[in-house]
Amino acid sequence: MEVKKALAELREGKKRKFDQTVDLIINLKNFDVRKEALNTFVGVPNGREKKLAAFFTKRSDLIETITEADFVKYKDMNSMKKLAKQYDGFIANAAMMGKIATKFGRVFGPIGKMPSPQAGIIPKEDEAMVKMMIEKMKKSIRVKNKEMSIKLAIGKESMSDDALAENVAAVIKGVEKALPRGRDNVKDVMVKFTMTKAITIVEARK
Image 1: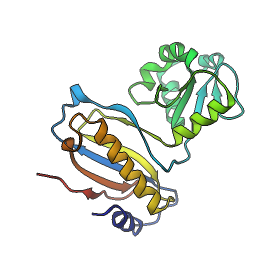
Image 2 (image 1 turned 90 degrees about the vertical axis):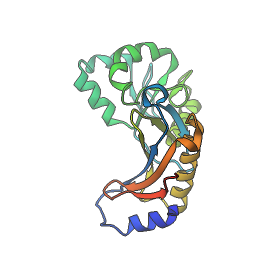
Image 3 (image 1 turned 120 degrees about the vertical axis):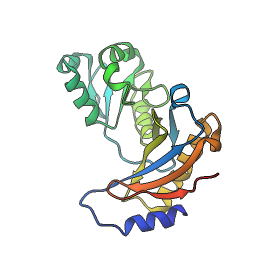
Image 4 (image 1 turned 90 degrees about the horizontal axis):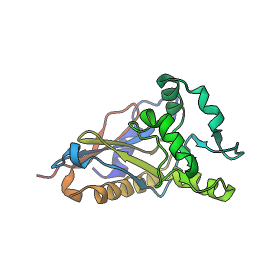
């Protein structure tokens, strides 16, 4: 089904009291999850607001900040998991990455929340650089899978169908580029809102 037709059908569903996330589900085939699992980023033309925090050496007026002095607040796995769930992503000063990895890596790593050179790590806490990274992260979607299905949040229900369709196209193209055999690794593609059923937009190929 065409993306815009699928979105129109999804919008006909029961109205919710919150702005639902639009998820893209890419089911894979001819793919060895143990050897070929993805861990990368794809960019989208239409970003969305994300709740971000930064690991910096000093407080920033641009973003909620966690300094090294704050590390003592996170004494156990539960407190670190709570921090990870509180934010969509994290920015970090490159000079702090060793300490961040030692302290938070065992929690942040498996769930894809560690700051990355592709989206998250900056060489210095310069205002322009921080602003640029915040904007970049709004338009970056992490692709990380351990299964034969990749679920990605590509936008919000409040976004226009045109913007969502552009994001869908960009994500499919980006994921296919990252897959070892490209389009031949894609079984089918589905789109859904948080509380709806999924609708197939790219049919399975024999």
